[in-house]
Length: 411
Image 1 (cartoon, helix red, strand yellow):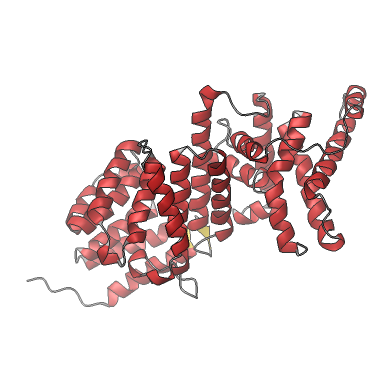
Image 2 (tube, helix red, strand yellow):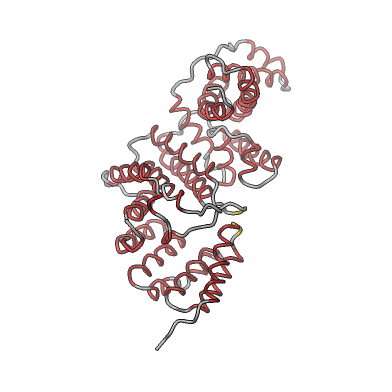
């Protein structure tokens, strides 16, 4: 592997193993993450020109260890830390299980003291191997701003005093839930960007899938981990048909299903089938089951909306989420008519706020009900509130087309 792209892939794969090895040796996750970032940048610069070393992992550990040693020598407690640094060998010892280290890193990056806005960038940097510049570009913020956000996140982890190890068994389930939530948010941001000119960011959704695969390999018997990975795969399978060659959004009902990735559908369906077989259904498993029903339908008209409506009812009971109720209203409209779905939207705007998705769903249901004038107003309201330019273009176009169509005949 000698190209720049393959070097980037290798560095992202090795990043959690290197951080794990260095953090274990020095006992400081925050400083280790900084040192490893410097080592990764050095490798990205040197390897394409000089060739990859025979032992890439050992090279990175050695360079990061040297950075750590130099940092300690610069600290105020120079004498004590120099004596300690002198006792450390720079020869790379093999990290313990890379799989375990990745899981520990995910737990550290998704620390309960962090908000998702801080946990996602830190996860991308420490576990995904992305640079601060790449992460800043992904979230459309200046690099210094993203650097400060990541630094504050690491400072909070350092202040917690948590050692670089798996959390106690009593905390593990809740911390794993935080990890899954961060990966879920990361995938959603990649699948439909919250802002910007592109409908999706495949680098972010792809990274979420890669990290979810790592977590699933680390805890293969957890049905919710399998459910989340299945949800990502079953959703990402539709991506090739989700936009036109010009980047325009194509809604689910109009997609060319022959373009869906059948290998991802097969893998995702197998995962969710096995997970549900354990008899411990959770919210990610239910969402994956809904996604599987969509993917298994040969065309939009063949979708099992009654079963999807039932699953959304279960999911709403589990989560109490107003966004789930919004999706449930769509399923109800498809199963029992648009008036039923519209009735379910009553009072929901108070819980969702002025979210563009509420206006968009209401617009579609009003269109199905034949109330074109109200649908046009809702499509325009949704377009005014989304910051994704592709979604905005789609909603504006829908409103414009409805405005030029003749009013439906009502006897």
